[in-house]
Image (cartoon, rainbow, N blue to C red; front, side, top):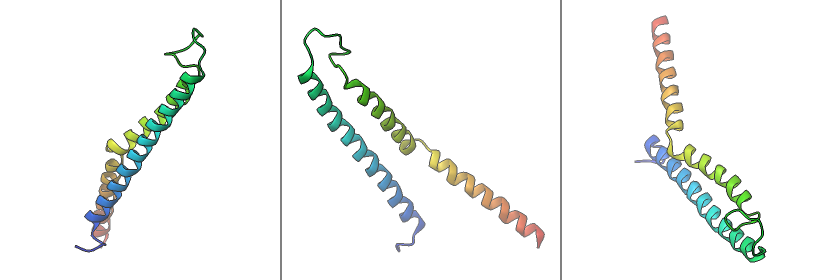
Length: 101
């Protein structure tokens, strides 16, 4: 097996995608936890809040959407669809070229 092995390259690419997602997720959890602690420490008792938070829910919600989109791009087979479609187009082009000769 060489470094040029397509299966190994695909495996490395997949591992890199997973690593990037998990780093994103861990960062999200840590930063959002810190935001919650800061918001709760700064909160006025009895103030009009959402789940006891004054403002931290906004970045948690917004960034959470980004994390969900990242997860969908990593775990749903969108990339596989592109690869399958490229393979079909390639095979169709090969048949067309063979038919011309």
